[in-house]
Image (spheres, rainbow, N blue to C red):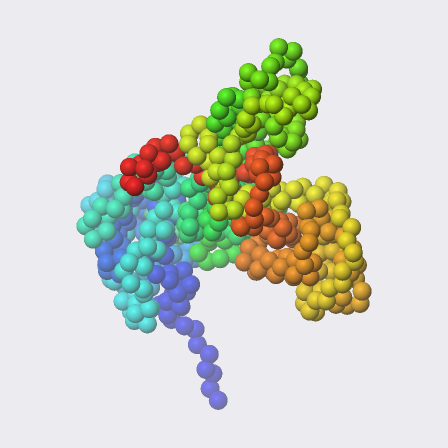
Length: 607
Ligand code: ADP
Ligand code: MG
């Protein structure tokens, strides 16, 4: 048999290689944009026709190319950016593989006009399917202009495979965003089918974000800045309240190169924690600068993946940076309860701010006080409030203390009582109370869920045993899967106040439960917790502690339909606003809102 192995002709080899680098018009846009940036351009103009199928034209005012370089640029592995293998570890340019132009030329009709700044004339090269059609001297501006026409003209399978113009254009816009966002110092224009889409002037990163995404971003952005010896993170995040329902504006850049990095994404998401409303995604524009020798970019032909030498360090720095920014920007609501005569202007926003030191209010007795001229609130629950650190409470305690000194008889003759914070439960589900700006409406279940959740998280974190209520031991039987899960959760359940023993592989004896668990069917409750735990496990990426705290608190929180006494409502509100994040349930749903006076007025007019 004769020899059958042959070398592929260059044109075919290039076509095959092109498949890796150029998947769609947007890939061409990306490569041309990157080349223009590497050439040091300060202005880049992009013209697109038919979502890039018939024309992609990019003009820059960068370095331009000499006659020889212009011809060389289309050779495979031709690059001016790397000389030796070592250079791979010091890459500061966008490109370095020397594949893009060879690939593009293999599958399109390309025209290159280029001129260096110190030469009088430029070069015009026409190349189609890797075949040079012409090369001539040309009169043009310094810089480079590429026209890429009829992409995939010689690869019909690919051309037919392209998506709708809208979809392809979306990809192009995404590439345009990725490059122009992190180069705000460069001016960009984008024209599609003769329509100007973007006219971006050079400016700051914030100006660029706003120019690309809209003026509303002016108030949405929070500045992020963190430096360590080995790296820095700079950029912007969007306030949690403007989080989007779709994953969209999530941009990581490493040394000015857009990258995707699920692990680092998690660092951001995790820093927002429960501030994000349910099913929302944080938007961010973050630039990581790090010594190129600490990263490896070369793991993907389109270079959107990067390996860090110390990913955990990068994670920690990003996490800390976002936390710091979110912490500086207080996300707690500021509520002024309308306290009537008692003048109890408690700023719960202040109280609830995480990490604030809690001090006991000073209690002094006012001997002048006469309960008959100034009715005071009477509510046992209020006496538990001593940890609330606001000057305004002083007045309250003053009265409370004096009150305790009144005799029983006096008590009975007191004028009509009323609450400091007047509370009303409606439908056994919602608590409403007047506040300075209108009417505060709270969902009792979500509020209690939040309270218990934070309590359990603290218990799990501090490794302090939760208080247990003795029970008449109850035996529960679980299926094999649930039994295994329960065994895994036992140590944490113990911290939460459960006392559970294993009796054989699927039988358990419950001797104690957390405080607050009463007359309940223990089996049903445990099953409910396990069920929620499993759902959370598949739907959400929660830590096991978060998941357990969340499942247990959801299970034990007072439900809608449960009547609450005044003191219970008081305690609920009190505890809620002592929470770190009083405004959201653990799943991110808003749990209260204020009906403003204007809204009430509007509403009345309507009716
Ligand atoms: P790479 O960018 O990986 O080096 P390319 O195939 O994209 O490979 O480009 C090959 C070479 O052509 C580059 O290294 C550069 O020297 C030159 N080049 C490409 N585009 C431009 C441009 N817009 N201006 C100046 N030189 C360019
Ligand atoms: Mg390139």
